[in-house]
Length: 138
Image (cartoon, rainbow, N blue to C red):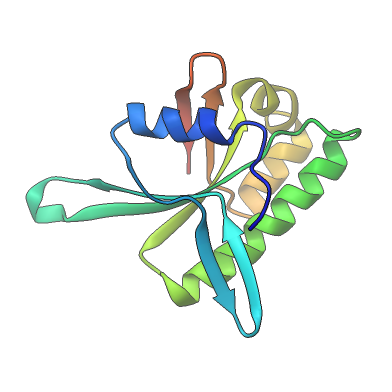
């Protein structure tokens, strides 16, 4: 089992406050002989005729020595997990959860915008103090 990210519980509580049911903590992925774990799996009931929405959420703190190094690792992990989910659970959408401050300082910069567009990143930004979702970027 992987170590929990620094903001794991803040994101988990924020999702619960937003009406999501946490179904996996963590969400186990297996491809070939490799085991991997996305931080959270969740679902939310939509209108009766629409069924339910399922997501997987990878939480990233960006508290390392270099934001760019953290960005490379986060995007690489996101792309890997999204590829596996597309084969194993195609109805589950993957999100990368980052603090709102990280989004502003990194993802609103040209390098972050390039990755959002080029890699089709889906992001959740959150306020760790209030344990609240700030915005969804798809």
